Amino acid sequence: MTTLTPAAVEEVKRMIAKEEPREGLGLRLSVKGGGCSGLSYAMNYDLKKDGDHQYDFESLAVYVDPKSHLYLKGVTLDYSDTLQQKGFQFVNPNANKTCGCGESFSI
Figure 1 (tube, rainbow, N blue to C red):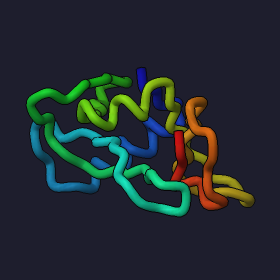
Figure 2 (cartoon, rainbow, N blue to C red):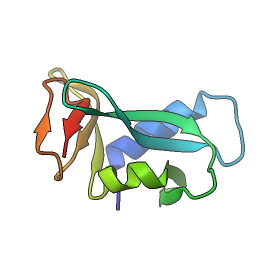
Figure 3 (cartoon, rainbow, N blue to C red):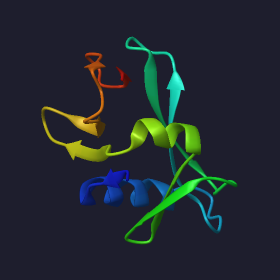
């Protein structure tokens, strides 16, 4: 299962509220080929598609396509807004290697 921390849920909900309101709009998490380590994380707003895995966090829908689900099992999405770090971070216990920016990984 993919998990979002309360801070990540709050930030995504804040950002979605700025979008054009659409019923069912949620956060899509996916994995694409590329990046320094071979695979990279992607996030965008989207509607549910056939075959998607859906997770719900405090009325926030998170969609993951079947292929990405294989790579995102056990991943936690966090959000920080501190002097040292601002933004989303993927914590992936399955990653063997990650790049310095934290946006790509290998399994």
